[in-house]
Length: 377
Image (cartoon, rainbow, N blue to C red; front, side, top):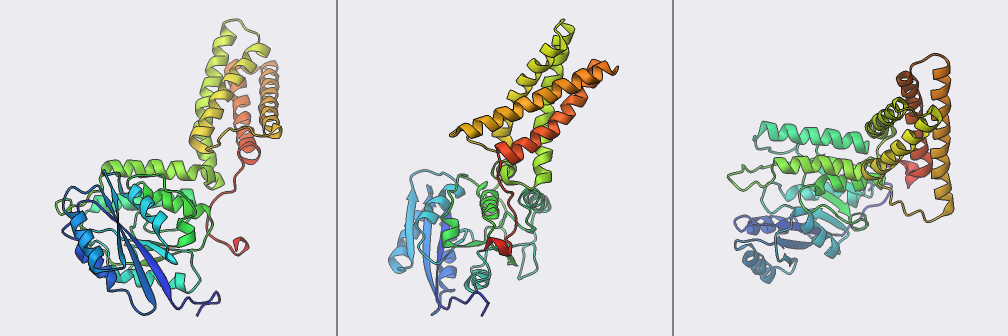
């Protein structure tokens, strides 16, 4: 028994997304039913995602034979993420797990993954195909390398040290998984769930699992475009709460675009005969506008609702303050003998640092995500 207490009897809701899995669905459900015992009750929610084979008929037969099994249906194929969104909303158990219908994962591992949850030491437990436990089918090297790369990028953004972000086996306390909405419809759901759980600063554990992977000839569905979507999902769902160094690197990219616009517009106006006190502010305002919209779009995901006058005042004060500094530095360096390009470039560099600090800590402030710590309890 842990210091948090142990849940002697538990109900596990298992969401099974299914698309054209008539050959394996029955065996999958049977495997799940076998982990049920006197201390573990199952709720199995099969979500048929517009299958074109006989998966629905198989699922209906399973529902008729086993009271633990429920069937939910999508009229058209929407993707794994959409199926999980439907299933999670209907789950009623103490804990919620994901089980693909393709037999790549062994349901017996779910009982082990439940232990830290039932013991009260974890809020979420991820299964890892890359930690030593059980049998692992040897398959695609490049696919494995891609998984490792995506896990690395996800860890950089979440500040977690997972070994297998893309694993299907993710088990949650029900209130955790039902506290946020799944937005991704396809396989981008995996990095999305990891991002949103990391932002909650809950207690996350990882355990080794066995893995019996399929070949594409045997029905494997994930492909290269899903890998690119995963990268997008990592950026989209993590950037606004990423660790400070990661956010600064992203801001350098955004700031670099704005800075190039700032310098280009200033040089064009300066050589067109405009005075520095006119050219510098005009270039700055245009660049600041570009910077702002890129920050909202790519980094901070701010809704820009401007619901209070204080928020408006802080943002305008920041822009005005940096604009004045930009002008002062530019004119000062020109008086000191620097060329216009060098003077403006130094002003832009100072502006980048101040703009990031102002946006991060005043305009778009959000604490970074990361592992659970005792003060979060």
